[in-house]
Image 1: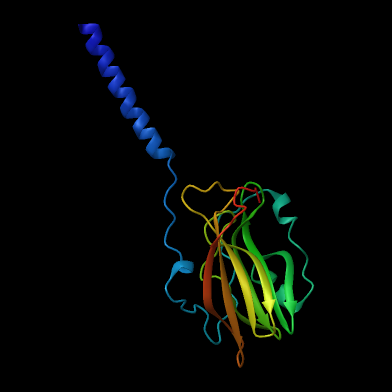
Image 2: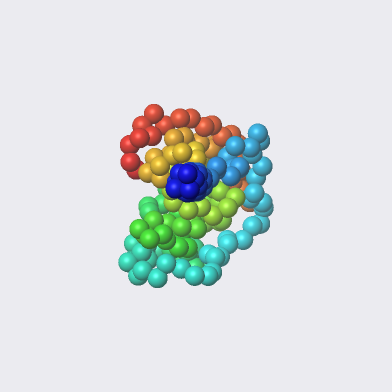
Length: 202
């Protein structure tokens, strides 16, 4: 009887431990995102200054910063002066230039704490996210396209709690307008759709 009671106690302890571990392994729900708001309020305002890259501990791997491109325009140099690493090819046309820039990198040299900056006629017009972004997280911007000389579209990865990091299950597309005098970027509409190929690694 004593052995049976001891075994029963062990079984209960193991069950409780397994339950606790399963809870820890479960993905945390995604925090509420600005992309899900009923209406999009602009975070850009007239006369805003080009923000500096955040300071603090950085990924020390020198190979990550070697991936940054060299400046080729005055806008690039403005960002570099503010401590940003330039990433990718700018999206540009009709006097508009959209530049991605990062302040840090993860262990695989993917951009962390990054932002997309919009310039019109060399004047800073705002950013495409109200907060800095990290690769492979909900709300990470991954594509920009121009829609004439006064609008642009940006696509953001949307992760559900159960999505693998490779494959966000949804994409939100935001249409922005670009005003004049001074140039100013404002979000207009946001549309979220399922990714039919969400199981394909990116």
